[in-house]
Image (cartoon, one colour):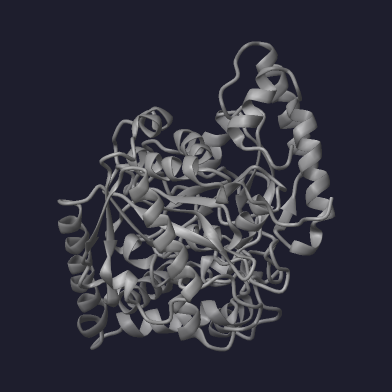
Length: 485
């Protein structure tokens, strides 16, 4: 059952070929056997089996939906009532929230079974899942390679078949990049489509929750359960949630206008295998009837420097609440209040988090705000305008998700700039607030390559349809890593 999609498992449950309890037990057993991946921080077998029994009872009453009884995992940045939410940081190592995040609420109401919380980069800051206080996550395709980040634990769990789906968050590519590096499908919805309530904030104008699964169809099923208006999140858009599976099914590749940005095609540092796979994917879409044309995003090259001013600035503000006073890590025997602040934050945060706090604080400081933060916001508007112009002539934009396949563990740990460039193709999407996804599109050296598809605001249905259409003419998403049984 570990290599089946949500849609296939839902059919099996409906036909009585298996029960949710059986699926959940199988997932828990696989999680235990694959402990070396370090994909999970917390596993909750007792509550998971109780939820599975409740799901089976609901199905017996005729109250089942497409997600009823499906085991999933949540990235450890989503607050979960009564279950530790650590953000993979010493700062929140023992924090147990008294409430559920909106996404957790919605998926619980849809009947999913939560088996635990997945590992991640500390406070979602990283591109390799190596900054976690609980240790690095390993890529199921190559245990000497990174799974990508920051949602690397969720990506590894889905890729290894530990769970059929998981939640993630995407601030600059943290769903799409690990999806690409582990050979799964991952969607970052339009900013405001999914409530951020109960997500421990990194960069509030960029963070967005999304699903990670094996196929575009599964992403549509999950987004249906996750999306919706929430008054507790002032950035959540009050807009009806369409039937994503219906919109996906109605999308035809014939006549679909696909744009290939020349800035993506000509970017430096892109592996030849990645370029070749994206060219092959574009050819496949064209052969299926899509109209593939070259477009331009002239300010795309500014996305990385803009992001690394705005995101650290917002992180500096959001993480100021972790001071050792109310909750979280507190140093031992502080001499005074200043010592409490300094040592609690110095000992509680990891190096990458401290680096970004310092950069963000500098960018927001008197005398530098206009030169850095304000200027970055102005260039952000130019990036947004580039996409708006592009979508006047195309329906979706295609390109690589990441410039390379999964790199070796530790290869970029001492070079922050090279690590930041891992998100060179994903960051602009967050700056513009657009929906985008990554689907498998090939292999390089035995490691997966991802195709990124970008859509216009709130056009997730057509975006999912384009990805689903591509997956009907290829089988990359059906490939599985050699995980020991």
